[in-house]
Length: 436
Ligand SMILES: [Zn+2]
Image (cartoon, rainbow, N blue to C red; front, side):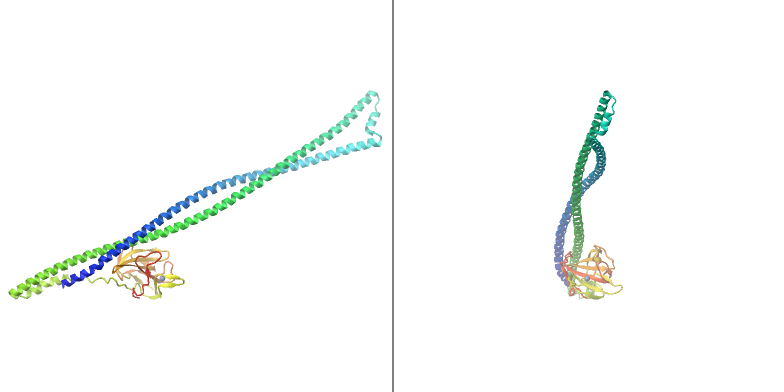
């Protein structure tokens, strides 16, 4: 009997070694993936730094342009003020010119009136009267001088007025030139400001683009980080499974050694008893001696590795495969009320957390007949296990719910042959493997 047990243990030990090798391979694959993901994260970080640098430079340019626009606006205001001042000056000059013109017209009218009167009287009536009214020759000369002075004065006033008018007109011309220069400068400044504003809006658009790109890179980095965390959790759960397998194998080896020792002792005992039987024919001692060997030789029944159990009660409401134009990478089990969710097989919880899409979700790594499987239990109301925990087939891990991206209470259950990845490329149809 002990011999038979030893042989049985030997045959179990063989696939166990293969299982460890397989798990080591899986672990190396995951480590490789992690280093790829890590280099992706490093690249994303470098890209973010670069994008932030670009944004800083663009922000600097925008600041400089804003300062320039402020200066241009100040100049525009100054020019606008000067233009209105110049317009006022021009208006005043025009008024003055009008006044001078008015005065000159009056004076000219007066002189013409005088000339007409002189012609009517065959000479200058006023002057003649003045001259003829002289009492003596001395008085006459004095009166001639006076008349000449009056006439000169008239001429002088006219000349002066003409000069004033010319001066005013030249002033007006100068001011008009100044005004048109100012208006030209103003329109140049306004064009410049429009150009600067256009540059600012272009830079702002670039800034928005850079920010958007940075946001995208951030979320890409977060995705990679989440993937990295999952891979890291899977690696440590596989390591734990390896350790468990090694312990189990050590226990098996010890049991095998014990069994071999017992077999040897039994053989020796049997030989001794045979010898004693031959010698004395005493049979009672054999029954007494064989009892302790029997009690320690029964190995614990092998945990049903390779067999799964249904993860929850309820109806299979959605199958694996195409659904609404997208691929459904698992099956849905739906039902009302309190429905416990259990581990589909023995394994190690590789991750238990709250995801925005999966809701409350538990990932379990299994090593079954040398094959690594990962099961996923999503949308749970709550979970009662934690990352790294060893769970037994049928052990409750949570309660059915509708958390994350879910419509109505159900369990979304995934089975992956190998480890989980974001593309779910290892997902297989659990129907036929897991009993439903
Ligand atoms: Zn589903």
